[in-house]
Length: 315
Image (cartoon, rainbow, N blue to C red; front, side):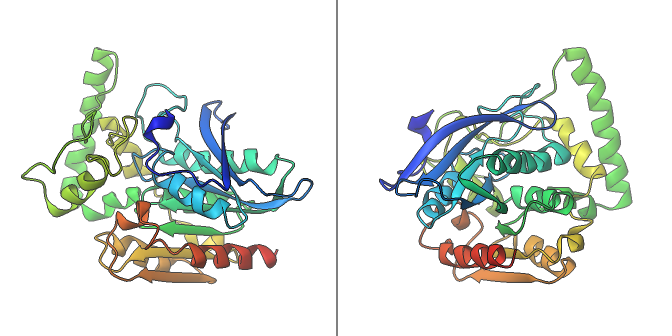
């Protein structure tokens, strides 16, 4: 679906569509970005970049890959399992374990390329995939450094509920499974239109309006990224906490990037507090959450380049 990339590919970068399987046997669809002037026979540092929760590789991940490939990295973007051009049934399922595994599957792929230094592979997670990238690094020592941008910890929703609210939600979703089973497929309610809207609908709260301004309008719209997941997917995130072991990533470094005015700041701040050294918090002035999806004037690519190259040199 090349017509749906939300950015223009640099004339100095090549993009190759690739496919590979995760450990569950689900075939993932990815794009591999490399500088056209790379030297034959040389092994390069590599990065795997995950999409915002509900997003796909043609959006933010491609923006990051396009820029970082020009800075000497081999960069892999991918559609998460059950989404986009990747495999997995039923469609639009969300799984904290499988979405974390998708990062490790990217490391599998990159680390077996002859032009990649398998001791210099890092991960970048945008929005919800920030939590998945960190979760993957907790159990995969091959990920030598992690950067997150506008991180969301999807599993943190459990902590926002009272015990009464939590019990009600679990019971509601548990009973929903009966209805899904009887219907023969899980309920999926997309958040954004199939084609770009002309304006943000009235009645949305500030966060909903912000997300719609990216996913629902021409700026970031993609037909494979209508957001939302199967309704009962929430059960997994109420039971599986992504960042319980974030401190064990140390001594590998973590860079948390967030917008100064982002509604999601507390996710990065909480994760930063829980992580062990070495860690760094980078605040982008005058930036909101979605600015770090695609605004190349605000995304601190030089900072990310220095962060990963410093981390890789220490290996």
